[in-house]
Length: 210
Image (tube, rainbow, N blue to C red; front, top):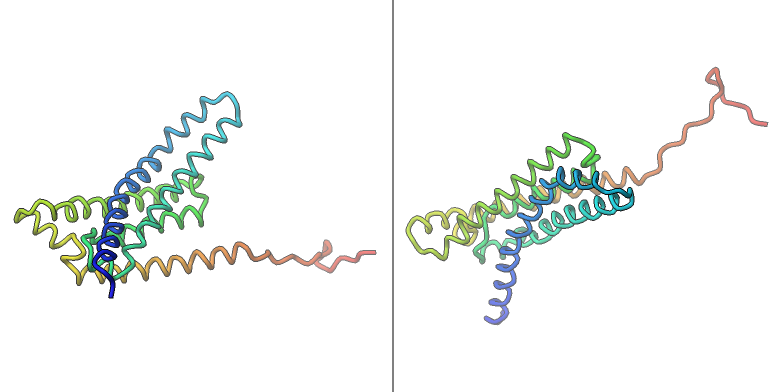
């Protein structure tokens, strides 16, 4: 049986992570949409090395913030955390969107593929909307105390809508697990050596080597 102090500390940490994810989602969206501006700045560098460093730092920051969003969203995959804390009910679905965008970066040419970049934009925007909407209209509404805010909270806060919250928790965990397996198989296939073609002569016959 855990002590009240431990339970209060756990809820404080989980609430802090949920609040920090708001800033992380905003940074992830801003860095992703700032790609044209960053590209324009690279053309102003007189040295190729400076442009390469600028672009490398930008891409690294953009992808690291998106990865932090997904890692921070792991709290939405724990049923007891979702059930006992005032968390946005769609936080798990937002994590699925972030993981899907990361997979597209892994399995496609990322910025070099216009369709892949568009799909990443849609996933990141959808994930940010799912998280920020439920957090601002649900979790933050619990402090207002009016009848309208209580109605919003009863739908969008995980601790007040436990049946839907647990269903979305399990659904999100399964979706991330399936996508994770796909990423593992993709990496294994890419890491396996390509089959070597046998040497053949001009007429399709095996070549003779002296």
